Length: 422
Image 1 (tube, rainbow, N blue to C red):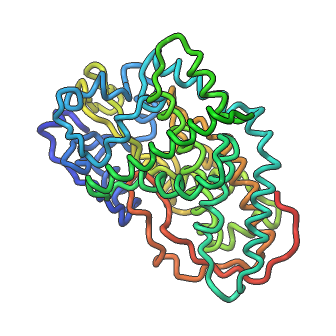
Image 2: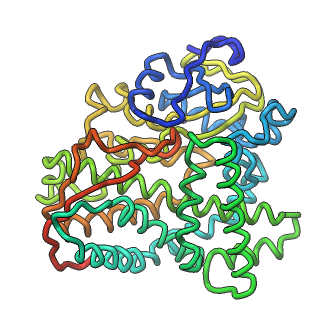
């Protein structure tokens, strides 16, 4: 139990390249519900892995995500301008806001992910899925194809860009910049350059939509900000768009990626779906539990000293807290001794925290689930002979302890069949 202050506790350095997210998470979980870790740049933080403790902290109004108000080292300038993860605390949007400001900013972007708007995207998701599968039909079935680059990555990006009204000419630029925002092994210079490129793209998008507004979320958000009387800034606008792109993309990419790998490496689980004893929704939920798309989430700060009576864990005012979703998803107390096993019939498959909890619960949850179920069903129906082109232990993880996915996903398609997507 973390009964000492963060400044004096011995720390474990998180691997910035994330060579083995789950082995690291298991080691940290074994040390207790909260343990001290070191982030890039020597920043100390509490790593919380216990699911119940995570729920209590994330629903506690005394826990903030606003570094500008509640992180002493950030306020005093002890966190350097070049800190590689600074984009996660510099943003001024619903992700980092606290209290009434958070409610106001979240309300403004909430319209992007209403149930009506998300469900209206179903034909778009089906159409993009079919287009991607048709394009893969032209590939040699005996030649490996990178399904992450050609399918898992492209689908969510195309869908969120449709929602936001991002011109097609900007898709590749956003793809590269968003990937860089989640990388935790970048140098200070690389992180700074990526941040500049990302915000240049966001500014260009706003300029284009102001000049030519349409029936899209970006145009609506611009109108809301331009007509706001409460002092919202252009930075709030750009940062909110960044949050929308991230919430609507990264989680879904990794969800689809890991679901494909798990089904191809465990054919008995795929057989359950094909035989009708389990559903594609079950696949999505167990994938979210087994391979949390965001392995570790940055950063929260207690606004007062907090002691969790159930675990004895103590968090001093302003001490950074990171949430270990990967560790929580495989917690043996919650999911049993076989928590490391992918089992779509698992009774606790829906009992995960992969979309967060509390006030900052992910806005893109319903969209991610919809994209995953439509695309996975269509992919495995279209390519019934689909298989990995490399042993699973040779798949390389993204160099990020935040984003949990593979660098590439080489697969052999086999012979495709004509079928309706979705």
